Length: 587
Image (spheres, helix red, strand yellow):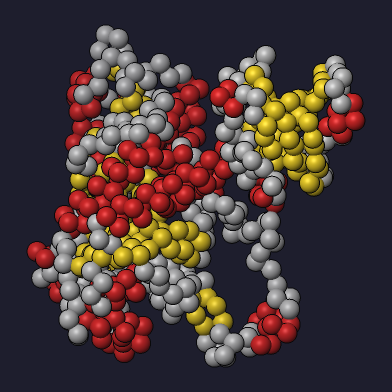
């Protein structure tokens, strides 16, 4: 057999045993008449010793080993004289008696170490080598353990895991679809699902009652650190539930995952915050509650004193950074440049320090008396040594979002965004609709199957923009890890929703007739949510990007640099798919 033990399991208790190991050469080093070889597999690293005085030929063979050679060795477990406390196997070594080179390796393009010398692009091109690194492999092992715990938990709550199709019809709402041409139906296309939303609702109509699926989803949208063109959802749906039923069950799952995978005990109940409050206090529908710095609105204090920027502003708001009055002029200038970046778009930044004697010194002193500045200080509850940062603008919502970015940056600079601290929150009572400048119409903030709050249903006829939804997002450390809603289960209400969204009855029937028809046959009240598995794993692993917990991710341009995809198709394939005209012109 290739091995009797793995490279991570031998201990002092195995001393004197004959073993066979197989794996990759991590490193080989010659010291006098001895050669030391570290052999690595998925489970760990073990040191093997080749003694030139015992077997010169075997030692010479070991000296020819290169990094990443695949080898098999036999030997006896012995106690190390110079132990390595950094390794679980650091108390032992193998006195080698036989060596078999299973496969030679070229010199890898980067070192297979946790602190590698390979850049992102190089490691993605050789991702199969990158996956040999312990830190990357640990992320995939964590992902595996998480999916197993999710399945165990949901199974214990009566959920059925049911697969839904990968080839579906295209939908006009939400992100762009990835489309798949049908050879057998020329000129017609499937779409890859953005989520199994309508399908899981049909499963509720069919009486499945509790469904889940760990499922691939696809969205053709611009990428960032927490977004990939293909991603994995923990997708769930339940019948005969209200919002509290869904929230309580999945709070339980969250507590279970944190306890089992991180050893963290979370509170029995998570905080809930209405969307309007989250936007008012944090400028974000996914606020990071690991630290304070809630927004304070200053219109009533700072307007009318001759400072034109504030006098003409639609919104003036600020944050108080505790103990940050020591910031130098250079640091404050850097913060000003930060908020003026195109990605944020502020025109400037006003700051004020609370001096040790309680007086306030600001960058706009000439416009304000100390009495007014003291009123501002009191509004923040600021103390000596605190730093106040203020933004203003013509659009209240946009300015709050700018202030949100400043708050997060200050949290980072002051070390308040601890990756080992977790603050869980439900954001609830989202608006049902949001205005799209591009479409010049109301769009569903979540999706068109979200149920409006019962008390707001009359507003659908008079003021749809003010209608709130039975929707909820789970936010952890400023990351939206999942969200969902109670769904519409009434055909008439669903038709009303499509009408507000600008669908003609014919178009609604064409796109969603299968769902509306199903509702005519006894649809139960139902709701659910979907968690982003990639985001969950990256949160638990303390990663900055979900790419590091996906086996074969795409880069920021949506390309797989290892497989060189996407790529052009051969003319024969294009002809079969009846796609030759547009593509050929491009070529």
